[in-house]
Amino acid sequence: MAEEKKIFIAEDNPQFCELYRMALESEGYKVVFANTGKEAVDRIPSEKPDLIILDVMMPEMDGYEVCRSLRDLPHFALTPIIMLTAKTADEDKIKGYNVGADDYITKPFSLKVLRARVRNILERSTAKKVESVPLAAAPVQPAAPPAQPAAPTGIAPPIRQPPAPPAEPASPAAQPTVQVVQPIILREEEVIATPKAATPVRAIGPGEDLLEGLLGGSVPAGSNILIVGPLGSGKSFLSRSVLARALHNGEKCMRVCLDDDPSVVRKELSLKYRADVANYEGQNQIRFIDAYSWSGGRSSPQEKYAISGTLELSDLSVLISEAAAELGQTDKEKLGGKRVVDSRSSLFLNFDLSYIQRFVAYLARSGHFGDVTTIFIIEEGSCDYQALNNTKYIMDGVLELRSEGEKFLGRVQAMKWANPNREWVDMTRA
Image (cartoon, rainbow, N blue to C red):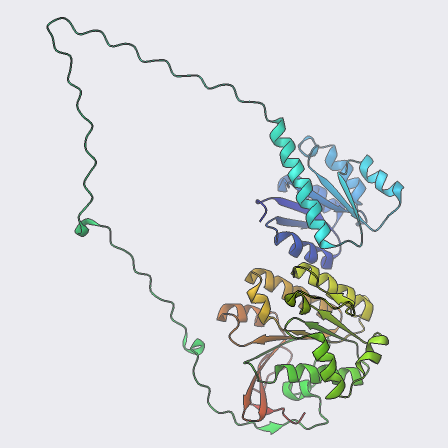
C-alpha cells in the first residue's frame, strides 16, 4: 500500500472521476477532484497535492492553461503533473511538455497503466526531494565534564552510592484492573432464528413479468433492485428469468458474472428459456462480463469482456463501462434495458467494505443515468448487518427471497416509488 499521498484530479466527466477514485484510493492515495479548470486553479494552492492530474478538455480553462498557471506559482514549480487527453498528435504532446507537464497519457488507457505511472512518478519525485536535502552538519559533541578536583590528602573520597535496585514487581493485588469488553449483542431483528413458514397470498402466472409481479407493478427505468436470500432461494432463477424476458422483448441486456460461469448462464438461457443467446450477442443485444473465470486461473479467449490476472474493481468497472457503451446503456444514448450483477457475495472475500460500496454506488448511478434497471444479488449472511443496510440505502427496491419445499417465494422489503405490499408471493410458475 502506498504512503499517504494526495492526488488532485481535474476532470469534468463524473464517471471518469469515480473510476479514477476507485483505482487510486485502492492504492492508498487520497484523491481530490475539480470539475473545471478554473476550480482546479482556485483549489490546488490550498490542497497542496503531491501529484496533479489534468484533463486537457475542460470548461472555463483547459488543462494546458491550468498547467501553465500552476508552473508560475513557486510552490508548484516542481510538483509532478500528468496530462490526460484523447488527442494523440505529437504537437499536442509537445504543447503539454512545453507548459510544464511531466507525463502525458492518451485516452483510452488502462487503469493499471494509470496506477503504474502515478506510482513511478511519485517515487521519482520523492527521490528528488531526498537528494535535494542538504547534509546535516555533524552534531556537536558535548563538552567533557570538568575533572573533579583530587581529594585532599587524608580525606577519603566521597563514597558513590550504588544504583538503586529495580523496583519489585507489584503484587497481583496491585496490578491494574483489566477492562472487560462486553460482547456485541445483536438487536432483536438481527438474531438469526428459524423462519416461520410463509404462506403466499398469490402466485405469479407463467405469462406475467416476474419482476413486476413481485414488486406489484411496472418498474421505473433506471431503478436499482437488490435481491437478498439464502442459497437455493431462487435468486439465480429470478435474475435469469428477467434477462430472458427482456431479450425476448428486444431490450438491451448485460450480465456481470462474479459467482457464475458465463458459459453456464448462456446454456441455461438457451435451453430453459429458449433464448438464442449467440444470435442476441451477434446483434449487440446482450453482453457478458466474465469476472468469474479468473478465479480458476483461466480466461476464455471467446469472452470479449473478461478479467485476466488479478481482479481489480476499477478494471471491472472499465469493462462494464465499455460494454455499456457498446450496448448504448449510457447517460447519452439512454437505450435502457436490464443489467444483472451476480453476485456481490464473493467481493467480500477480496475487498474492503468501503471499496465494495463505492463500486456498487458507481454501478447504481451509471445505471440510473442510462435508464438501465440493475439487479444486484447478494447471498444472505455473506456480510454483516451494517454492510447490508448501507447497500439497501442506495437501492430503489429490495426483494427478499426464500424457498418453501418446492416453491420459490418472494416479497418486497422496501420500495421508493410506491408503498410496498410486504406479503409473500409464489413465483415458482413464472
